Image 1 (cartoon, one colour):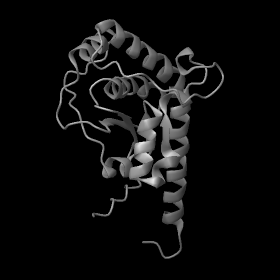
Image 2 (cartoon, one colour; image 1 turned 90 degrees about the vertical axis):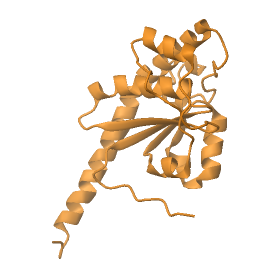
Image 3 (tube, rainbow, N blue to C red; image 1 turned 180 degrees about the vertical axis):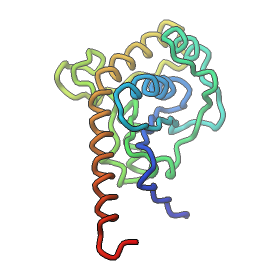
Length: 194
């Protein structure tokens, strides 16, 4: 078993979005975060997605491609990526579509528990996340195999959740970046440092 690589201190904050097949929900969320986050951040973040039962290289489903395009998100170049321990270890934050995805991640890497959240937990005010004002682990239902209208609803639900969640995510990223800066300054100022 190979040891996980340590993330470089200067590497951008990395968000990993996880669903089952990585052909609908997590690509939706990846595309949305790439669209929503840059306007909120001072420093760049990387967003990737993977699936707990994904086969490598599968295209986004046709209905997912159409639904995303109608909302202004281009997923035409996206192909599926299986979830690996290395992806989990490299991520600073992991957002999952359902509690079962979180459970799978924690089984693979118990240390990932603190950085893994069901996406609806970050948007307590969204009607999509259940009871307004309360964090929900209900998650987002899989549209796989459904008609285009179901994909539209799924994308709209994720857009509402992530639009509410982005300020919180941006705050977490900025907090992480300031801690990284403080630790770099501490190393630079340490006695005997070259």
